[in-house]
Length: 212
Image (cartoon, rainbow, N blue to C red; front, side, top):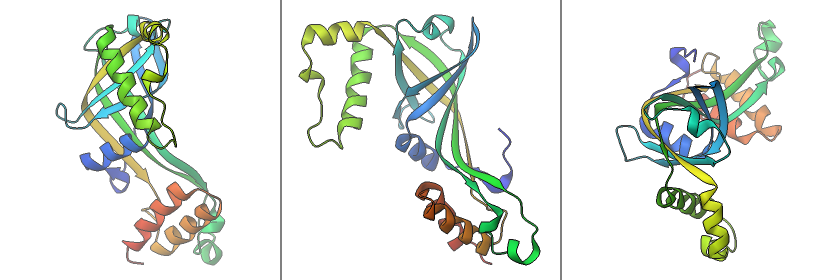
């Protein structure tokens, strides 16, 4: 990933928070079948290993788990938001006309070593924790015990667990840091006006911390 210094986010705790809040990642592998990408919800165990451990599961019918070898390096990409930025949103454009369109975004790249876990206990634990996490906001959270035990057992046998020990984290927050504060502010408010609060609010935070 091209990473200019002014877009670099290197704080581990911030990168881990980003993953935890946006856990649907793209797992990129280079196994026996060549390059592959799978889109999966991940659980982050932030305090395990040096930089954290990611856990997920795939369908048994998915060849991914048979095409990788334990210890292979993989990459998981987590996207925390993005948005198109029009030059018209920069106040300076109306003075100098020296602006062009761009696209702002926040991403985290998690590199690590993958290990396949084809065992019921591991898979049950991953599913249970993911379920508790993502059902927490429901008025009446679904629990694994809500499903008939034979049905649940069959479902768990149809998936395979994955674990990735993170070895490197790269973060990029492209939020107009190379613009003057007034232009960041103008574009941030415009994005919020379009309904993109994720990137708009992040830009406004940067504008507040930057002298004009």
